[in-house]
Image (cartoon, rainbow, N blue to C red; front, side, top):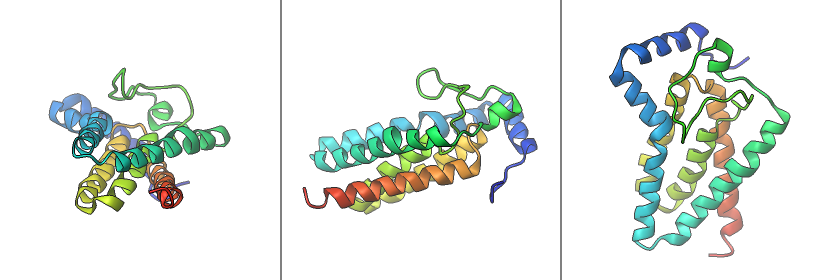
Length: 176
């Protein structure tokens, strides 16, 4: 049981609205699937202005969170996604977010990724950090609206990402 419960009916209502309203669908699809492109834009800009060490640390935090910690959790905890439970096909992209039969809803990989990168960049660039925090929150909301995750999956993803960011900054403190 989760503290922040979204009812099955709410997920199905969102799916109905996604089918009926192109603007609603495009908004949530952008933030839930394609917003990853914003991280490439931010990273590219930071590389362009010579902040490669900070981009590298954000990338290391991402790797730790998304490619090590998250898969370890999946080994021990299996959880179905809302679209799997309610039997609908969510808005998806063959490249960035395709439906799966794997039981890997918890934690949210998008939440893990955004939070790890955001924490590191927020540490070095607080003004950028505020925008990235907003992007992270909206992305989490979008993943719920699209039916990819439950709210607790998002919070867990953020927690894992934050911990990976903190660990990356702590370990790297002696190197930079």
